[in-house]
Image 1 (tube, helix red, strand yellow):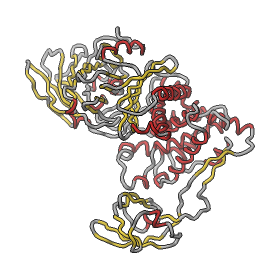
Image 2 (tube, helix red, strand yellow):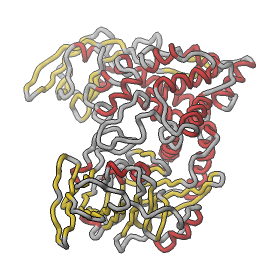
Image 3 (cartoon, helix red, strand yellow):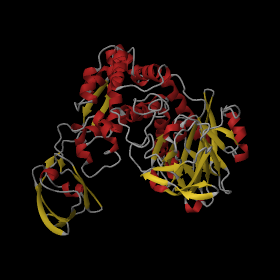
Image 4 (cartoon, rainbow, N blue to C red):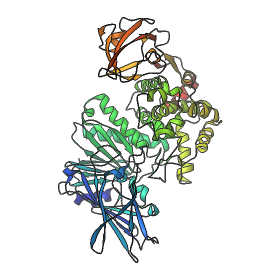
Length: 599
């Protein structure tokens, strides 16, 4: 554990190899963030624009608040939390004209050299996508706190943090230029750099020669020595995928809370929120390392290896791409694969997780309706806004993309006869578009990368599996690496109704089930089953056979009615991956290319 105070920030910055001097000319935009009464959940912000240095030639200047934050594809309307925005003219505060939902216009005087606006931001939503302030800590997601000027998006910006007197530490991946001041080279870097303020612990380690930190907020019963060693091991394995690290420093911000809510990737950092009790169980601890693995691999996939739409960003509108299945789904795939390769997950456990995920995707009716590409494009209106019918009409680009990670990895290995795997496709994308051209890739360029690495056209498999809903040849691909693919439910007659109940009411009805076909609805309160009190779906089916009819008494819109629902046969799969015996030398070689192991 490292004692880390504001006064020691310079020392830690030097350890991180960050240059405090000569960072560049004075930033055109300067932000100052204070928190005078943290318990009220308000940040006080002052933003100043140097009009001379920016060569501003308009009679007004528009300040905007982002409507969303990169990595979380939903319009969140951060401007709704901005209050009391004003500016100063001739020594007096004057109001500012608001011209639309997220834009404030300041009219300038002739010869005005700078403009300063002041405003408050209410921050009381503790998630990785938003900002939060109370008497224990502050968390700033810059998209939801700092206003920006669109025309100056490529100009350098600084942020001065004035912590409340009870807060002693500041952690951010932004370059430090003074004891409490940080600088970003442009708007994208600023928005992509969260800030943790409080009294958190700070742990340090290196990956190669690259300094890493963990800002650890909240109480948790954890062996920090083991935890740091496990995170370091994961990071080292992740870095081997591409073989080139894009950072000179990196920061994990970890919030230990009663209930975790996932993570969000950033250019040189990540924020993860985990359940504080999770460290105390084997599965919970493994889940935390898995989350960190996913977010860390985003350093390459999506932050550097990215679709064209994902940077530079339009912060006011949706940024559409067909490729979130790759950016998010394949990051999930690598998050798990990295732990298997590093030995932090057994091969047996890893293969079970692969089979279970495929089962989940193939048992989702929406998987036959929506392609991975369509799910990616519609993320803005579907993924973060699910309803009772979502499972019937959509598929998660996370889960489907992870499954495609397995499938396309095996396909590349088969087509190249073991000369290449999925790592090579990511290396190709990294070198050709991020390193050489400093841009994202188009849909066609993504497909071409897979064709190049596999040594054969990927057009058909992309049309079928990425842009279509064809079921992959799981059995044939796994056979290439010496595994058998079986459905343990095949040949079984399992009674099935196709609905779930939560707190006495139907919460989901799956398309194609007898419950769906015979009129049970989400929201129905189940009162009785064949005149008996309803307890659960499992108990209802315990003594029933396929073909039996069950009378359900339900309450819908305050009125009781009875529906006759026949018991159907389950068409749900339960897939299993098991090793073949007497592997050929080719199967052994291809398996090694897939998993990095023979067993």
